[in-house]
Image 1 (cartoon, each protein chain N blue to C red):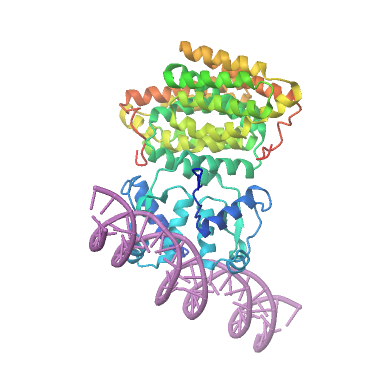
Image 2: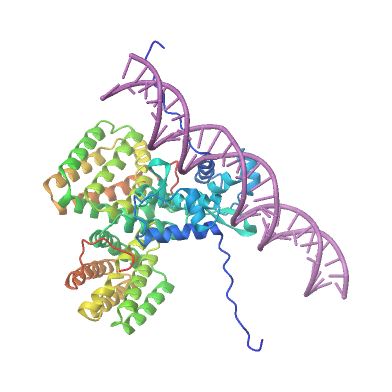
Length: 245
Length: 245
DNA sequence: TTAGTATTATTGTCATACAATGAAACCATA
DNA sequence: TATGGTTTCATTGTATGACAATAATACTAA
């Protein structure tokens, strides 16, 4: 008792978190790979010397994080977090943190032209067809705000997919889904989306020709245009995005 | 029984998922906001007419998704998913999907220059100081692979922070953390990081002067350089990133 | 006023039970 | 031998009830 002794706080981590961590570690270390089945709850409970409810709580945590899901034979199966999970997490983070349109736009201004450029060199015939089909649908709803916004989201989604880059898809999807629906408002306020359609068409042609530079340029122009449209339509760029736009 | 009748499959969603969904919806609809305390398990169980274990499973799911966490008075509190959660989800998705260095690089090639450009117009004096401090530390470990890689990660992190864009931070952080440590390998194989230091310095000066274009250009050059370094060092760009690199 | 104590509310965990269900095995009949 | 039905079984989803541990609070006593 002579020297002042420092004690590190004893960690009282609940058992369900220990179980969760243990499984998570095994997954990240490659001992469990996507596709592997986890043992039934009873068995796992026995092995880890906890009870079934505890195991189940751990399962729910991992499920929420997208690392496991219900598989065949009703068993839990290890999965790579689906883009959907990442998407949701980002979506929720963006909405709940009050991220603004301007912020989303700035990021899209970086990502979309890059996606277009990559797509120009890598796009597959199938996706080219898909985009063409999307264009056709777009042409038919130039004055229907909701439909058009949907087409817009899809168009950009397809271009990103064409870029054949998982990381890009992962990063941009939630942004696009939150940002582009604002086009609905733009249409409602300043009329039909002819400019949008023209831009999409030009981009499509550039992709078809494999012209990287041109795809990039048109996409950049298109995204800038989108912003100007928002401004003209009186959308407040510094307002936080919300779900019901 | 005359007309062929179509039945829609009855949805047998487990109760814990219903509870989870209901809370999640309330959060996303703004009826529950970050900071709000959830009722105690017993009470909620009563209200929702399920039992406590069921409520607890729902809690664990939401916890795993980062939407709630333990708060004061041991109660569950609604939270906006921390960047950490998004980060983890992306990190896990990237690793488990076998995303390659090249893919990460392509995205960073789009994001980093944009971040630098934005930072040039928005950076705060404090962050400018932070970056200067980072540069000083970098200068001292040009030949220490691990340290240098850490400094590199931090430098880019600071630049992104300076851009003052939550969405950008969210999207790029996990990428940077997975990509830039590869610089360690580069150093080990082709010698000290003078080029890196020079680039960082140039970028810093551009930020200080508020020169958007210059910051962007140097950053782009820097990221391209990084890739060339990897190639020279024999890093296989098409190998999936892994945690222990 | 402060240190200590009792009280209470709430969580973390367990043991146990049981209905519902998907999978698999088995049978019986045409 | 097929086909459709029945049985069995393993496993999950959910409920009940219990109890220890603990943070927060109220309540003492010095």
